[in-house]
Image (cartoon, rainbow, N blue to C red; front, top):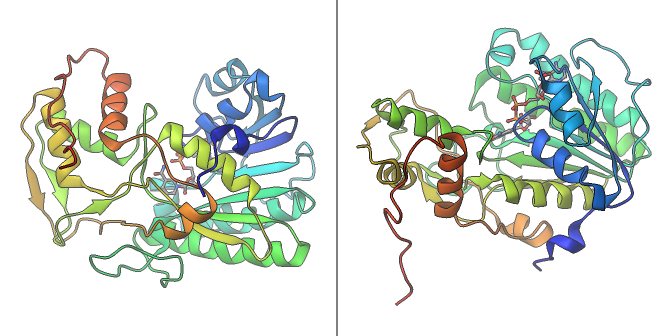
Amino acid sequence: MQRSVREMQLRGSRIVVTGAAGRVGFPIARHLATPELANTVYGVARLSSPGDAARLRAAGVEPVRRDFGDGSDFRDLPDADYVFHAAAALGPAAAGDWRYAFEVNAQAAGRLVERYAACRGFVYCSTGSAYRYQGARPLREDDPPGTHIGNYSFSKIAGEAVVTFASRRFGTPVTIIRIFSTYGPMGGAPADRLELILEGRPVPLHPDTPNRFNPIYEDDYVDLGVRALQVGAFPPVVVNWSGSETVAIEEYCTYLGALVGRPVRFVVDPAAYWPLWPDTTFMHEILGRTRVPWREGFRRMVAARHPELALTPSPIPAPTAE
Ligand SMILES: NC(=O)c1ccc[n+]([C@@H]2O[C@H](COP(=O)([O-])OP(=O)(O)OC[C@H]3O[C@@H](n4cnc5c(N)ncnc54)[C@H](OP(=O)(O)O)[C@@H]3O)[C@@H](O)[C@H]2O)c1
């Protein structure tokens, strides 16, 4: 059943958002910290970029500097009713040193559940990159694990196992969300492909074309993130976390090219990452549907990231019902 955003809100609570400076964590922390919700929100991260702490403070989020790779037990972190754990070793940090990736993405996550054992809801951000490729069909929550992105995938699969152990051990209500392709003003894989188009470079495709995804726009991942905090259980609820609509890279890049008035070239590359196409049946059941149509979300993303560009008004309109 689709719940209204209002019903989904968390109010008057203490909430820890880790990775609060990042693409997923920041919009969620900023939303939870809006004064009308009367929450106290702590944003925990290394805060490694200049201005991160000030950006969090300006959004009403109290910054807490912490490195999840330091092996500590988190006892000194502030008490909280809910925890949204988005901090992770990603990209080169995960690829370069597998021990570090496992420390940050798995062991630290287990210690964080232990620290917040008595909380009302704990979300662990896993990934669609934790699935083994199943060919051109949507990935279901009971599909087997696989290594889409080397150490990163291994460490997130390990993280799910550690968090599941801790949830059972301490009776902590946990939701493991397997995130598929976020996008919006803060970026994401679709924004990276937009840059390729603007630079006149080809967009790589996995040979199993079309390369289907369900990208999720910022407004929707804020809503579904808040909802995920409220549906935890032990052992954890495991759910795909994505947009409700499926759209192929080929289709959305063609749209982006038309929007910014640039030609789009594709190149089929056997080394390209396989497409991450989620089954959303269970997500719709427990978290609800997303609301921002992909064309609208992509337009908003381009306008936010490239305000200097004049966008074509209606490059490729959505098909109308017969
Ligand atoms: N965005 C997606 O499409 C997507 C897809 C699948 C899964 N996910 C998962 O969603 C979560 C958030 O991803 P994101 O896209 O928001 O990544 P992001 O933009 O790179 O943000 C990651 C956050 O984690 C913090 N962080 C990194 N290493 C840390 C450490 N050792 N200790 C403490 N904080 C650390 C970073 O801040 P500092 O560098 O300042 O510490 C930043 O706040 C991750 O768990 C990721 O695996 C995201």
